[in-house]
Image (cartoon, rainbow, N blue to C red; front, side, top):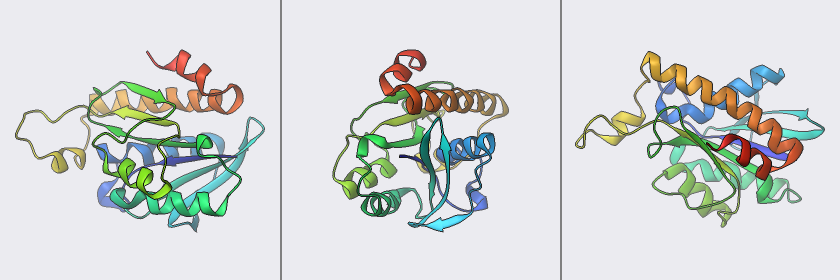
Length: 188
């Protein structure tokens, strides 16, 4: 079983913000596979389906970004046979320019509070993650919270949507052929 968690904040006011690209990814994959995302469980909205012969759970934590780990911990505690290496977390990253995405097998949280929460709650950083670039604020003194909770420009949104489509294909490859093959093909 694979658990794919997209990070974001619940509520209409956060729709289409930079910080919600993880939710955008989950919505896109759900749409592509016809997965209904309407089940409330584990402090999250979830949907499930078999993809490439594997059971896949899509997850959008409803705890707000900084407490995302609570939802992930509840899922892993319930599915005790799922190894953390079958947990894939998708989130925004200000250290990558818009249009860049990177798949990693494991690693630190960096400055991302949602990732810090997950690592703290499940007590490991040994799980794959996908970092979708949202770029840096336009100038040094720009408030970071305002930036990540702001909307993309039209051109940026096009680039992000392309990233999301590419990573959907990478997710298919991770499920069927493993993360190494996906990293070799999609990390450019």
